[in-house]
Image (tube, helix red, strand yellow):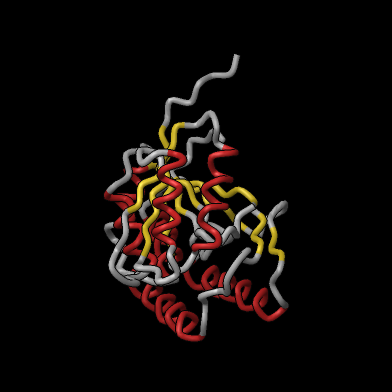
Length: 229
């Protein structure tokens, strides 16, 4: 007889113009977590494409207790989106993930993070330049910061809620640097971090929001963490 999992998982999904993806990702979550106690917290930053209306329709199907819409008036950054979602989380574990469908155990770890850069992990749908940029960014961060994990910029992670609250309170980054700062500060605090391989598939609908300005912010964040951690 299968032992029942007594834990509750809060899945925080930040969105901006993800109308075409959010229904599919919610369907997949409910399909694959049928015997798991969980809630999905959608933090939408004022998407003009009707993302919130789709989420409200999903609430009618799955229930407002399972899908929580916690919108914000405008784009305020990825880091603060997770902070906002955490305020409404009732689970003792928190999963953070993207809404762009890029992510296709039982452990004593405080944090379990998905990685593209170990055996069994990988990336599909990226051109060579994007692969080199991502790999180069992680190698540079590994060399300078020694965080003890292979994938600093991934956005598919499981945290013990108390650990997430502790780590997120010490973070200052709001954009794409946020994921890197979270894992570096967790490592510096001595939390037990384990990695599992994931396959990252390029977004199903829409285009990537990563541009030149985000790369510049990443480099600035890298220097900041080198100096302050």
